[in-house]
Image (tube, rainbow over all chains, first blue to last red; front, top):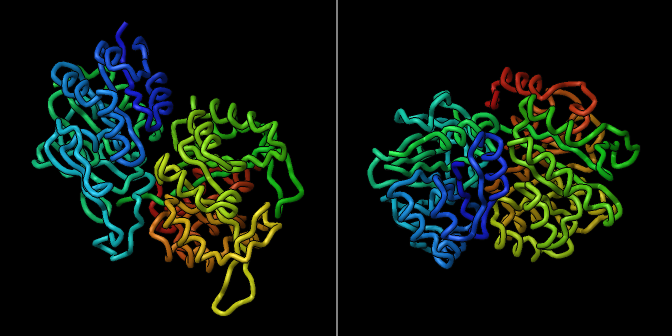
Length: 214
Length: 255
């Protein structure tokens, strides 16, 4: 039986992620694991995350998951979610500056507390919280069956800014246009929470379980 | 097009049953929380909030089971409030499948708890619920009450909201005690005053009796989300009807 491992590094909403994967698993076994060797053996891997990046990175490194992630992406599909996406970048400005895993080139920036809608000049709340639209910027197996501009659930104050725009798989507008999803090789990552985005989000997980990577 | 305004049905749960009181008394039974949550999900609720109003802490475990059951079937954000007093309470609810917890009375008695919770679990999952009542004053003033609106605290609502955000609250659930259960609409002045003061999202609560009230909460109250209970529980309106009504009024919603 094929397996998908959800990396458990003590942070984040693993239960929600695991429950959503189980809902669409059909023949794939869902494992939640804090054991790097068990994660290495899985056929595909999800890196979830919520909370502050410094605490997340500290635990990822302490448990050795930074190396595991670097190894996995050479030949297996990896899905990063929210802070799990941000952790894949080089560096985040959060918590006074935090080094991240660095398998995707780019930084994680802050929306700022003076964010405004460029059309109406209305002040925008931070965190960006709720259902917003993902504009698909490339065709990708992960978008199969998902309408362009479909709404997903976001909750974050920081956003990913890749070095090259060619890595962006979807963008979203909130004061600025920011990266809603990113992909390179075997990596796909979303700023939104597919596990909290109802049917549309479950479709993302279903696609991930079918995706062969690259 | 951009971020949608959210509609959040709220389920007051007592010993595992959904109930709804009028101004915190006169409780009517409205059914099974899991069944109701599933229905709201199908109708297009953007999130669901559960407030555990079970008096005895012995029966708090019931709420954990409700959350577990809902979380395995409903894939939208779930917030749980009522009786969240320490880090262990938060962890238990998050492990059961809640995405956020709402802290109310415990924040008033020990504001540091909000700081501790936000540091430990992240601001994104810490909602501070505040129950406010208008008091004499010019300009308008509101005071924070605890114990379901029975006990005054002497704390100014606007100052409290600022403080809670500084302490790490990621969202404010603002209930007008004057309006709760009355069906005459939100306290719009209160909602706007708080929403314009803080940089985090504000959920308006208390007083919804019809769909125009939801629109007013967003347009005049500047709320980022609107919460209602009885208009949905007793089948007066579906969430889909509410969203279509808001969309017609020019409010961006997820349809």
